[in-house]
Length: 308
Image 1 (cartoon, rainbow, N blue to C red):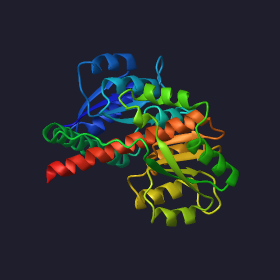
Image 2 (image 1 turned 90 degrees about the horizontal axis):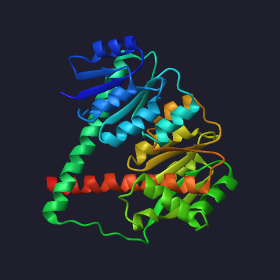
Image 3 (image 1 turned 90 degrees about the vertical axis):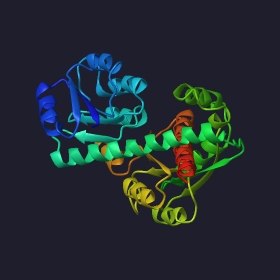
Image 4 (image 1 turned 135 degrees about the horizontal axis):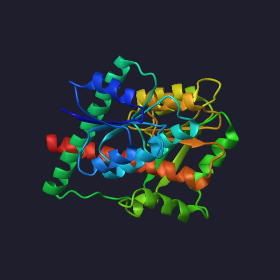
């Protein structure tokens, strides 16, 4: 039976969630995030649900510390008061699986937990088989430092497209800072994988970009939110249907909290980049997206080799 941790400073919320989930899961609840973290040093969980607005430590701060202790647990935020910045942090800093609003819908909550745990189970099994393959078959990654990763950027402003393409393809004075930031986020990345090269395709039309996505395999797809033909969320969701392996990033200066929550829950985005952007942050987010995609694909490939 899966073990679930729930952290919320409101005891009535903890009691309600416990009543709904007991029987299906082993549930432990805490009303103080620091006490929950202390407990997590010794107790392992498959999934954690954290409220955002808590005294002393908000949900994003809690999940960042929890992730260091238990990086394999699925992470969800439960909140009725999170602001725009909190949701950005949930996306970019903790990569939560879903954002659940208060008051929650019971059926939706149960379905979301089942989906999160099923997704986690697949990733862990792929990783287990991949590690077995590496040991038994002495498999080593054939790194290609000159590999060009394919990036699709969709925005109705041509000047934005030109600037993003230039930022990703021309080496600038911020590149050393970009590499340092990426290394700080994931010290296990090799030097070659901290210096990705990108081939950038741009399009001002989401409809034309979808046609392109049916013909070209992309590693990362970036979309503006406000576009005349189709908003960025609908576009990214359509891309997810065509290329589920492509990591998706929302790019906007107009998105609000509700847009970002939909981006997490419906479009399953990996990251959010605000306009105007900083070049090193753009490169850092996209490089992390590529590294994450590479790892998942490699684990899945090696798992398939072991299965056969």
